[in-house]
Image 1 (cartoon, rainbow, N blue to C red):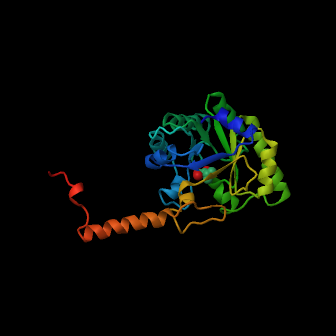
Image 2: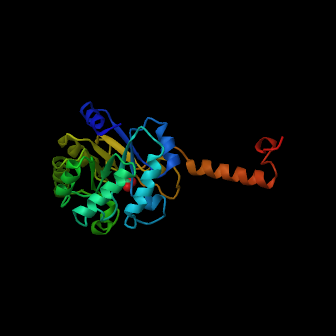
Image 3: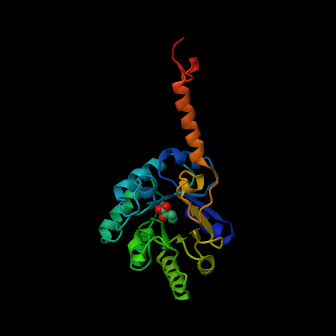
Length: 263
Ligand code: KIV
């Protein structure tokens, strides 16, 4: 997959599927599926490290996760997330962060917000690195937004979102994530852009969807936001396997002869 194919998919009305991925073994799993693209999201801070927001995530953490994902050699496009403030400390530091993620194996980077990022996005794109935008509910602005909450419910905010999306397209983004906005708002924005929109909690009118891998697999029964559909009950499956292992160890049913090196 590459960014040119994504443009063609939008033009052909073909939906695009993204999932998050943070490590080698799940990247190997995704590599054997038809999913189009991988985001090494800074949601890794919450999903993999147990933080209550993405704010503690650093470039070094994202580099480690991106390297692990890239080692699986998946055919999917890999987008690396620029973490909190890494692209807001001036051009040299922003470009250093971009360079680290790309050298770790990303094929593109993602950053949150439009206002104040347009010139930087153009510079990154002109440097040969594809950029994905991310607007609506932008988790790195959690405290500015007053929490993880649906955005753009009022007409004025919806119009601002559309203007931000157009600004991101003009700055050179190859795609834009629309997070937690009403479906009709996301549909309107998607129709105004020539680049694909990728929705999460934004309804069916976007050009593609993204979900956190662990959410769609049902890895955490305590986390069930409205916009997530779980496609398996991985928690129960893994739990059952672990309990079966524990029982077999304690009843001497494992290991058996075939698990031993003797003979
Ligand atoms: O970090 C992430 O996983 C994301 C997606 C939710 C879009 O930014």
